[in-house]
Each structure stands twice: as structure tokens, then as C-alpha cells.
Length: 175
Image (cartoon, rainbow, N blue to C red; front, side):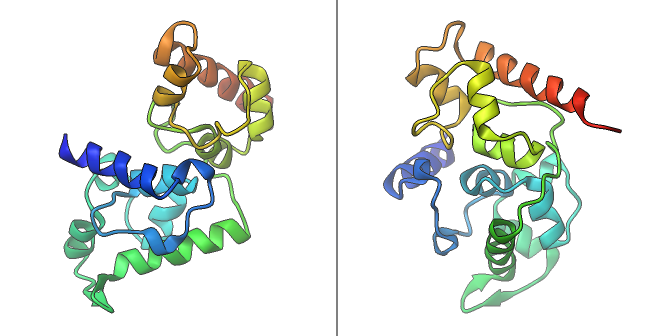
């Protein structure tokens, strides 16, 4: 519970919803999942950059603990993994590569920019097809966005709507 509060407050304080978050704000308490959605970089891309298997349990532990498990040590007092992730964020921003959703489905903690970057479906398409305004909403988690917009049916309905768009566009791609 405290970690969720910490994550929300940190994101609010540093205006993560703007989508222009500096890698300088990376912290050892963050998880791969938190970083992926906050910076809109696919988890799989971050896992590859760090050199660890893309598994759910790996995405939910702190960077400090992950660094310790990998036995990587520190650089300037910070976990080496944090430095690698910062470099990966900058590399991804310079050359975005859709990797797919590692979870294989849309989830409420995701935001539309993260989904777009992971799937290769432009955010404009996602917003248009689910029928919500894009202005200032790309980096807001779907659970929070549904409340903000009073989305009919709530968070579950919004997640399902986005999933339908992702599924429809995935079917259009050549195999």
C-alpha cells in the first residue's frame, strides 16, 4: 500500500502525466513495470537492455533488489541496473521499437502511450477508436483515466475497449 502511495505521489510531484519525464528521476525503489509505463517504454525493451528474462516477477521487484540479485554493484552510489535503464530510455526515445505487450493483454495500470509504443498502434488511433479526448490523457493509467473521464462502465470497460482496438489492429498486421 505504501509503495503505491509513493509511486503516485512521486509521479504527481514530477508531473509524469506530461510524458516528458527525465531519466534523472529514476529511483532504486522503482520497478521495471513502473518505469515502463511512466516513461512509455515497453517492458520487453527494458528487460533486453538490462539483460534479464522478461517475467512478471522480474517486473514487480525494485530496481535495487533486481540489481542485487544480478550482482551488478553500484556506480556513483546507484544500482548499475538504474544506469542501464536510463540509457535504454534515451535509446528508445531516439529509436522507438514496438515489442508487443509482454502481458499479452491490456491492463488498468497501463497508459495509452505505453500501449501505443508497445504495440506500434499510434496513440491517435487508440484515442479515436475508443472515443475519448487525447488532450493531456496519453500518460494517465487507464484505471485513473476512466475515473477522470467518467468513462461509461468504469475502468474495466475502458480496458476492454482498448483491448478490442489492440486486437483489431493486431489482426491487420501480416504474420
